[in-house]
Length: 148
Image 1: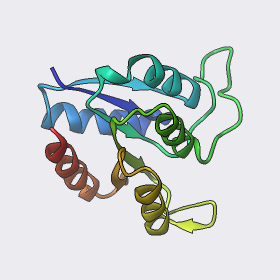
Image 2: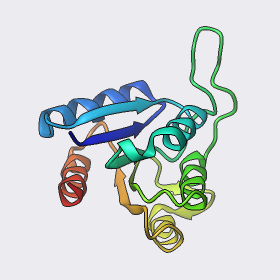
Image 3: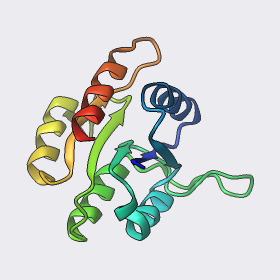
Image 4: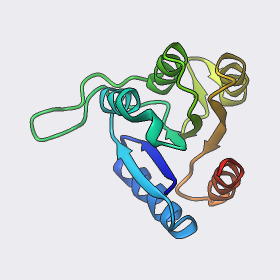
């Protein structure tokens, strides 16, 4: 069975993505991780189980819980995860799903080129997520279909 890891800390966005994926790809198993630390640990320990990783770029350091606030937000946590994957020679394909139009002063289109050049074995592209529009669904479906 095909398996996708979804790395997303924002509950509403995660629910939207999972609802769409379950409808479009009912035969695929989905696992989600909600922070930089939990995603990094999951990838390190189980990367061979996943066909694709859907990766948010900005997320909390730790999983949010009753006793944990999530720590300091990491604006480039997704890039750090890609860097770790590169250093560990993990070649699982990654699609970035983001709601931000820029990162550390770079437009998303510029950041996209940088990620493609830096992580050519992993990075497939980005999907600009929106609650108001559905074009993200078309792009995400196209990426996933091309990889399976």
